[in-house]
Image (cartoon, rainbow over all chains, first blue to last red):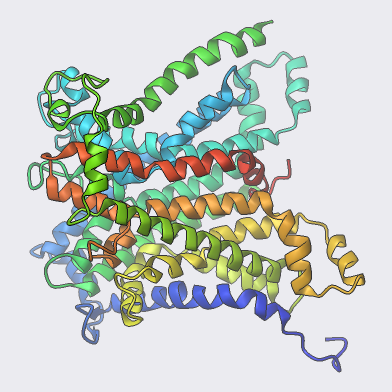
Length: 294
Length: 279
């Protein structure tokens, strides 16, 4: 601004353009197009036809519609999953990170083992779990399972949560480990002088010091839990067609838009937008919490 | 004294037991890949194979018709490698543009990108399919590769890391007559090694394990990557032909495991920087 004579330097565009173009084409346009489609009737092939709020009305209020039934079943299971999963995926990795932080003998190996499952795909780990849960020849048979756990309540939920925590908690654990590494040692020493026990130190020093990382993982874990797809998809593969299953919203959205029948992409988009609103509202509340804490 | 006791005995003992349980499913998977189909289906559950066999591995190597597991493995590998290299290049360039060059509204633009990336991905998956279809990419590798190049999480990570590199490095190079491209490639890039290692690990693992998106854009059995391929096998065989499927699953965990072993030492180091707290 000061030197108007100088030629405008556009070097920065060369650096950011490749990312920006891909970002706009494959992320920004789809978001807005997706919101638009939710107000239309569309089969993925022809031109979307504007229907106003019809899709939303059908999903939310038309109790005779299959979409309405699917939406509320999916929503119920998704919300239950969030409620079960979020506390587990914060507390369990935090406990492991705290124990690993005192550097017990062999902590490197333990760290590797605990992080290991997060490296693998849900189809790989899901396959193993289905075998272990099998009533006739899996580990479940040794434990005296009388029913097929993967499709019987409440076992299905217990199995789903154990598998999820086992599979995903490693990524939060490493974030906590990194955070604990940067808590100043002097604070602990000072507290010890005052005769503080481990619990006092945990509540008074550790938790406040890693507050930012705790809130960050909370936001990410909640958003991720609303988007759950892989675990129930693989688990419901057992005994195709039998028993009540845990079907989550993303599974319904996927099958309505890309399933074997005619695509109802408009309906699926409307469901996605509602799910998106849930995630956005919860995230905004959390960001507000982070702000007010500071 | 008390602390040493905890450190040397109690904590390792508890962790040891937990880790044994933790690794049990994977150990079971690995051991099962050496069992025959009959033995896996045996109602007397046992952990270790009674008769070790390599039949499952042979079956996978020889079968290329309707279950081309080796082909899927190669597809996944190419997708994951190309995406990782592409992300490393595109993200480091963008991060340079957002940190080392001064331009009007730079930080505002970055925050808009960041805010947009917080939009739930599920909304854009249907239109994304339409875009990819229009480009003629259905059943082709770019469908899995190109959308993944726009990762904002990685951009955030690398940008944070770059903000920690003192600007004096650039200034010194500029005095020596270097332009931005030389500074990027000769000064900044070599310093990004820890964070780039983690970005590559995340990208490779993410692509290798992705299920929802590839299961939508790949329906040709010969073209698909491993993860949706395995899902297809589970559907096709149900509970009937478990041994080869488990074996394929065990083969699929090898690349990400090896990559993690090589990148482990940079791991915590980079994550602590990404959180904005300097260690």
